[in-house]
Image (cartoon, rainbow, N blue to C red; front, side, top):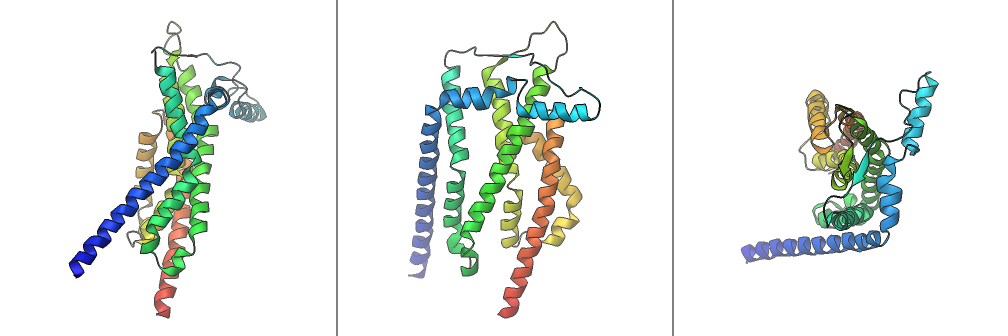
Length: 271
């Protein structure tokens, strides 16, 4: 009887996971349909704006450069063109960018579903922090998205778009290549900014402690640089730009880990 109960409990768990995937996928596709409708706005006002020399990031960098008596970071015009070389390339880009936007817009709901799935394994006190978890994880994700969009993506596009080995070579880039650079920069930044949330759960599970995190700072630096190299475009500037906030987030994660361990000790003492 006990064995059957465990088996049913496991099957119920799988059933809940199945419905979680159905609900989250439905939410992503729901927002994707909305994004699909606003094609012109998404591509003209969001995706291809890095070709515009008046993009806000370029203007800020130019103003900072002028403050130090130089115009080395000023961009007067972009020197590359974006082209479509395959029959279905534009339609495919439209579909995949819609799904990408669907994922970004649905993220708070995804965080809510993940919390619901993990809730039975948490203590009653921990279950009360659902709103905090959804807000905190969503805030970090969108902060990473903004960081990727306004800092990482324009720097990467500008670097590759204007890099040249010879004036003989024309800078005509495939649309899919351009979109892949932008998408990778933005989404990877959003995911990497979830580091404190990952540390939170690892501490809860007893897999890491504040002392462990402090002791392994130098190894963490190497891992962060490797992740930055894997998840961002392949130029060194992008990797450094991503690594700097990741180090700050790692230190913030240590503070979170300290707080969790402290609460756990207080709870054990009360028992």
